[in-house]
Image (cartoon, rainbow, N blue to C red; front, top):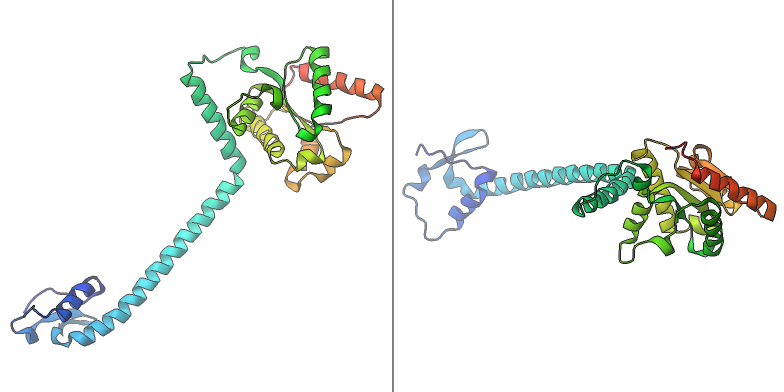
Length: 265
């Protein structure tokens, strides 16, 4: 008598063991009590009733705990998922830039101060593989006519390097990014990846400066832009590729002058 035993959910397994044990013997068992419910001295001899009541009570508590825990986890997962989805492009961009920065330090690169050493290319040309012929002709005319150094993926990407790393490195190492907009471009995952990475580069590494030029090789392509990219038409430089020979010459001259200009630096 005078023990501090509690008939509670915490001791449920212990009480079951007492009830099922065939070898355990308690002297004067009828005098044992426990704290149960509102009674501090509930007779332990009524263990059958105690166990039946506790199993119902504890199962309901367990269900509540499991339900509440599941709801909290679900709410936290949903919140984190929404945050990650909202900032997914920023997070991806920061990851690839940090990755390249770490590699640069590991290779012992020195921080360059002048523009020529900061940027390896005057521009990164983003285009769909289906438009490769037109892009090669444009690149050749710009490089030869304006002494530009341009980056195109099939020629300048580093073999054996992950494509996402190649893209981010090319954008980060170029003074500007030129996107050749076509229906094929809009349907290409990697082309849209390049477009978004160029946006992130402008916002987070170039202090919001205009480094992105959109060239509409197909006029209708600009009308097919996803809604979340429609602001690009107004906020970014937008050029429509002409079709007559005279207009093409003038267009290349305008684009070449833009890529040579230092005013955005």
